[in-house]
Image (cartoon, rainbow, N blue to C red; front, side):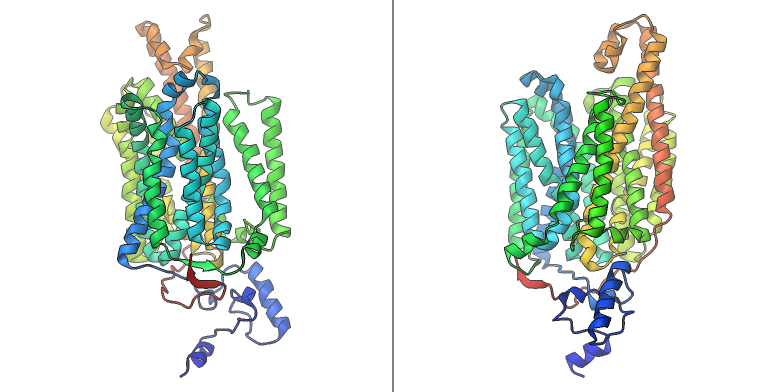
Length: 572
């Protein structure tokens, strides 16, 4: 039987003259009539995944030879490590930075600038990489990250340092999104679970190493090494990617590719994210939550977000966020679970140092080591769940199981007291980590398996974006809860002491009180932390409920299918 006859027998369609129809659902009769072709095109919008989509628009997995593959994995690991490290490493350098620049009032911008740009740009990278290719997009993200790191490392003013952090965030958002997109291009769904778990383990390890490394640089060298360390490692990453990553690049001229960019959606999305994240960072710190600027920016952010959704639904032919996909059960359930899970995750992680360093009076180094069980739990289940997916091919139950563990772990955090034995904190934090690790990367598979290959990059980039957005909202909410409870408790116990609130800004101030008063102050901190954990339990429960709606989808493993017509075999 000839090759053409074989393809016709399997239901393939010659779509060389209609590239836009390569993803048509198999439920549409294959005929030459133009009217039926147009009907097939409409069906795409309302049926994002079809039973025979893997035949008509096959997912392409381009796994390189072993040596190249290993070097690419090393490069991707470096990217994740540096991007996640940069979120945390600067926290231990803050005292030295404020001392050098004498600018304590602007210090919050070091975190805000990085967080805001990295979160805002993440969803853009998925569509941009579809247009310009994975390799160029990944190298661009690396260059932006290293440029920002260089500006920060050689900054001669606080303003220059903040600008550097913002530029680095633009690159970091791309690194976090592109790592998972590139892995998904190289590996079939079952095999990629193992490597997604490995990348998740790298992410969690960096969260432990970050504060320790930043403290060491500050104490024994200079805080600038917190940024300089990115340069040699990032350069190696760029080199490995440039020499070894040979994924197909989209066809078309530069002008054609620029025309495909959804500029309206990009601008509206960036504006909405900035208008929402800025007041969440400022609220309760720079401005009161009920101040006009906070309320006004939040309202403006939600209005712009609504306009963005309408524009993405009605205007562009290639939207950044295809709104019609969100009726797919695995997308809304997974993204919702990730959002609330991110709120709970950072709500607990952000305040663990307060518990260990203030309540238990441990040093920063010891307090950092106390969080190792948390990271270890993530490593175990992130890696283990990936191996499970590789061997068994099932994943739907894993996020719900992980969230169940996380709910129990968060509930046990409520029992943290000044005299809680170390073995108890180790067990509780290990349990929390085991829960988080289950869903950290498996959720990526859940959304990828539910959509057609042409949407893979878009839905993958949204995984990182939704999780990061949840983390920001979580920190803002529990931060407000913590501060309000702590201040009201201190005022209740020390109504005549006008300096008592110094204990919330400089923990060393607590040592100026006598033993009885110190115990009372520590008790106020414990009560405030318990309120944080109560809210985190609520977020965990919401994440668990939504994760129960995740459905199993077949994990495609057809590694040697025909290349899509839109893609050129030539690598960038």
